[in-house]
Amino acid sequence: MSSETVAIENTILRGEVGSGAHGTGLEGHEDIDHMGVFVEPALNVCGFHPVDHYVYRDQPEGVRSQPGDLDLIMYSLRKFCRLAVQGNPSVLLLLWLPEYTNQTELGRDLVAIRDAFIGREAGGRYIGYLVSQKKALVGERSKKVLRPELVERFGYDTKFAMHALRLGLQGIEYLTEHNLSVPAREPDKSTLLAIRRGEFSFRDALRLIEETEASLRRVVDACTDTVDVEKVERFMVAAHQKHWAAG
Figure 1 (cartoon, rainbow, N blue to C red):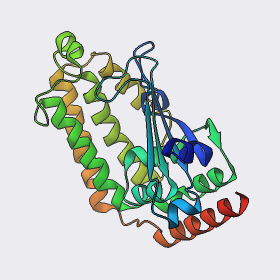
Figure 2: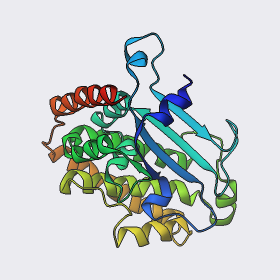
Figure 3: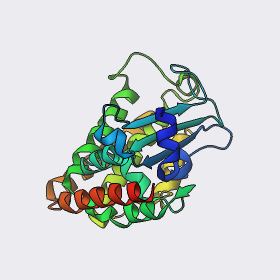
Figure 4: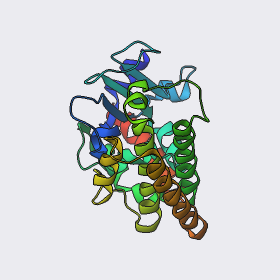
């Protein structure tokens, strides 16, 4: 079977992520980001052809997505859980969506153990993602400007700035409250949208990002939570056995 067939036919969880989920997109300006999880058939787990992910984009590789385009990333349960245990912010988001386009019983069971993934490990990842966005914002990460129209209009890439701030705010909420608000809660959502619309100067946006980063670093330093790896592993084993038996 192709990677597409394996992923689509064995999906247990799928939903909209990205700006659409966060409530920070601008109408008519956003693509549609979906993420999902599938359980590999026994042949792919035990045989010579593992399928750990599948990617689909309306646009060809290297071409920027346009408003309304679909960008889909599907992870095998094994890869998804590995990334979630490591605290990957993009992956963790899927477990906190208010609704899903596809959710089987195993998908509901995966969401039900989301607290097992909460740990200090995520703090470092949130900081890393935030710093990466900040570097892109100030031009340290790459000389290539992904959104020149924003730089021309506002003097900086307001979407990079919004994402950097969002990551800081979400990291703080995740580690202090054991929760991810989707969409973003107020007043955070209004602040993020204001930055996205260019209502903050570059200096003020950067100052707010750096203040939030400093707060996140203090939260991470104080965090004593650890991921319940054994609980996640038990779920993974049971989920594969149940899926294979049903198939």
